[in-house]
Length: 318
Image 1 (cartoon, rainbow, N blue to C red):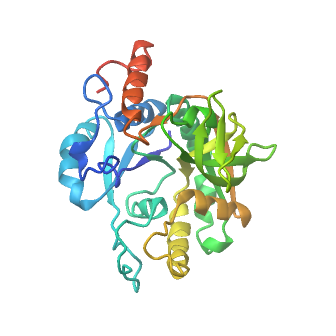
Image 2: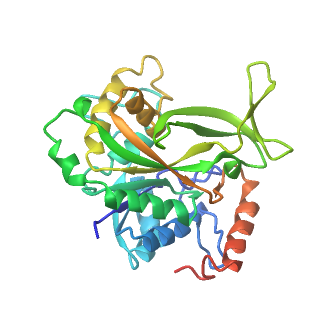
């Protein structure tokens, strides 16, 4: 079976509620499991052979002791480091910039440790087993040799084959406030046409979804539409595209140096519109949950316990 890697973007964990380090991570399982543990469990079950944690160097010691060394007993583990000053030669950190450069930079940080098809997820989101199985199957069936044979072309000349797990919008909403989701448009072949980044989506009283318009009135959304939750499947040659695009991103900041982010959905949407990528949308009916607001914590804990009661996970995960 082909090797496949799971990349977990964890550089921002510990700051969800204003904390500063790994020790602030909330336990959701009965034996102290965090959300990330369930994703890794599902990834191993699906067939992934390596995990890469993207973290900050300042959290490496705590992260290894609390998470990494435990997981390394179950699957091969590597680390990559996302830092604000990790920039191409000739570039400097803008004055007053405080945060790293977004999810695109996070994956680019893995360039030296990934040489196989890989999936990408957020550390603090629960995705369910179905998405891991489908993304893993896609990555093991894609012809990476053909992608490698294309290395002589510049990134601008390549045509990529990626995938993305799509989740039903109504299964991704919070009871406690608006969320940002990438609403997906697809063609008849199930390939993405466009990702519409939409902010302030709320859950309505009838279980539907809506977003506020400019005059504060609600615009109804299709609650059954598929959305991106940052669960991607990429081939290793995507790293070259990320490196090339990151320099162009930095060149085009144009006054937004302190807040602009180099984001995977934006990168993917650009490749789609330029006709340089085919991105297969893999629908999942599993219910996503994560911690967007402090009030989400008890709901996530209850959801985990329900999954254990249903026999989907053991009480003691590892």
